[in-house]
Amino acid sequence: MLEVVHGVMGSGKSLEAIVLAHNLHNMGRPSLLLSYYKDTRFGSKVVASRLGVSWPCQVYNEKTNIPELFAQHQNPQNLERQTLIVEEAQFLTPEQAESIHRASVNYRVVCYGLRMAANGKPFPGMATLLSLADSVREITTYCACSQDKKASMHLYVENGKPVRNPDLIRIGDGEYRSVCSACYYRALEY
Ligand SMILES: [Zn+2]
View 1: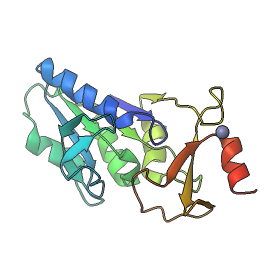
View 2: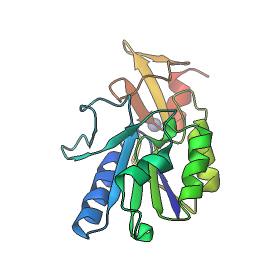
View 3: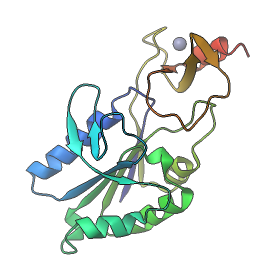
């Protein structure tokens, strides 16, 4: 079963992934938490939430055979009781997303990631995951302008000025703001 959970930066995806890994651990259900190798905000091989909790992880890059990595770390027995949790899943290649979907026939896979980049375009790997997923859920958060307006876009701000075509390789939320569509277009003066 492939479950995809998406939400803008700061919506609590890492926190939820950590809670899931922790709960599975307490239930005696083995899991592997995986994150993207460039996300070293909190030190490598650990997923950390801004709220202060963390959990050990393995890391992937664009060349990683993810089902193979999972097999190396998990007991081949009782696969149906095991879970692969992927953080920063927007950096998966479409081929990796397809391989994860195939693997999800044998064990549970939960992917957390951003639906779109700061230029408003879909991440190719996430687009593939969203197409193939058995279930899709959004973690909703709201724009600073109103509790009624969902934050759905990422605005990249450099030296106080919104940037229309930011460098998409950058990661972290120091200069990204999660905003509603109205604030996004207003800031970029479309
Ligand atoms: Zn807004």
